[in-house]
Image (cartoon, rainbow, N blue to C red; front, side):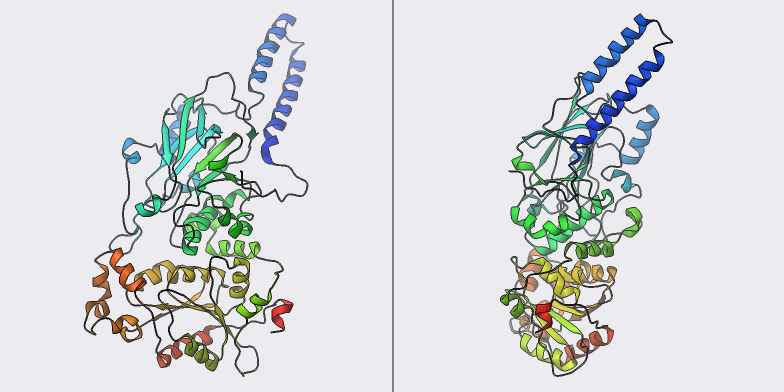
Length: 527
């Protein structure tokens, strides 16, 4: 079954009829043209000419792609230079690494300055190629008479003799350097064939809009990856289309759409197509398989259309989650702030709590300390069933967010620019904590306060001797590979913060915070 939501236009239909309307206009224009010329030619010649034109129109009437023509020599040279041509060497290129950075922590590949010319809707002539040069993602482009068969294969019916006839495959997920992840992503097949020249095959559904193909496989299910690998790249790839785009999803999960429906509706007005469960064939003029990605939870404004940044993505989240909420009795208990006895406007601190590993062992004492410093405190324990709209509401009105390094720190995206983000950094996670969350938070305009624990504040202190490299030189231990880091520092460590030491961080956060009397729901206002 096709997973979908209906268009949000008031009384406006889908994009499938645009091609037919254009052809009706062309038809009327052609008739007027023949009328004007009829007096200048003998009747016999006019009849022959009319017959030829009539046959041509009939042969192409059902297709909006009749205007697609081969490149001129000049155009071909330009497109080859700008977009590049896929080579056999690029086809065989694979990246199998633990992360997409060099030994100095620098990104191994970046997009060229002309990358905007590769965005959906930017190409005007027939193309069939894949750009496999980026370490994080492959992006394939098809432009022309493209058929999406019910089998899930995209077929370009080429009219350009220079277009290569072959089959390509792509896994449209932005983590191609990690084999374990990509093993969970299905291949999408792209085929180019020579057009028979007798008009296009009839499709069940015509689309005058571009299609963008991506996967919700991989590490979908982890909130960090859902934003970093999926939603932010989807925004980078499609925001310039102003919701005039059709999303085609491989490895589709109904729960994913239910979770992020409000966000997806900010990026498209149209039905979502589930690639594995198509019930009809579709035709597109422009197809992009794969998503563009920049940096960790970030957008590079200098290479974005209209200089869009991560703040613009955050504004999109605000539009998505704006509106009234229905609060249950359980919600009231969950999101109730713990207040001190101080009066006046107090800054609100939201503590995101982990379970399983990297647990904050003295949470109760931390809450009491925060109240003593002068915060109202909200304890947040997000899980996969927590409604994101409510999490956004809580964090959007918070002045400070705090938590131990982990995927849940992704929720800094829900904070207002200018607010404060305290990340507790366990042993052995300095680089990851800053790269994945600290630096992106700074780019979004948050005031980032890392709290790097000492060996005595780690549960590892009781497992290893005080002179063990696990405690004294986590960097050297980390050189043994990701598996070692994961086992020791991520899955094998909890934290117990020194209250006198952490108090200084809380006091600094309070000084930096700017508490606001933000509007709250009538229910929570009475708590």
